[in-house]
Image 1 (cartoon, rainbow, N blue to C red):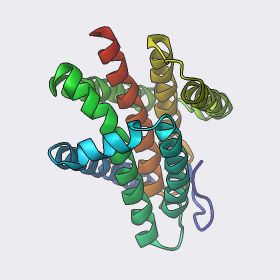
Image 2: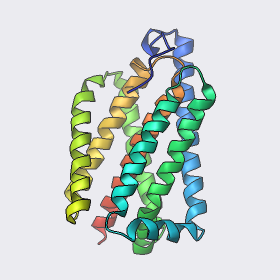
Image 3: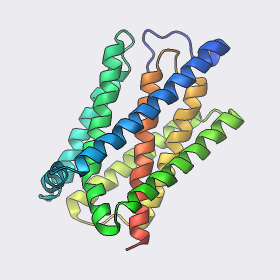
Length: 234
């Protein structure tokens, strides 16, 4: 889940100065990733690209399935690049690639949400995402609890959720409010897990990979909070 080769000091065993520097760099990179994502979405949604991307993904029955497969491949490549212990440039390329991929995948949902309830629902979802993320992060930092024990359960739940999503695409059934709520809980679990890894387990020097993991969890949380808001106003 995080890089090892080339990094020899887990953050929990590092000096106070190194630990604080690692945490500061991780969340600074996360902030830049979120800011870049927001900027990219703002540009895309104000251009003809938004309708083109939405039409290409939703225009065929299996459009989402192809996008999901491509996103998983890109995500794997981006994660491997971000975990490079020898090339900072490769690490940043991985983070940038993942942000761009997320921005493209989000376009159809944001277009539909904007048409359905106006741009304010997107802002509201972002606000709720920020509040939940801050609360979960504060919980880990305040309690200093190690949530690494959640790895197995999160992995199983993630594969199960992926299977349900693929089945819904193949067989044409709709994933309702309960599934969206369950995915919000799953994203919250990932945030707890990765945040505790930032405090205890990530090797010093892996702040780019750590920020990518947190960004992925925040994006998942935002996606399903937005879906819940749309369901509540339907």
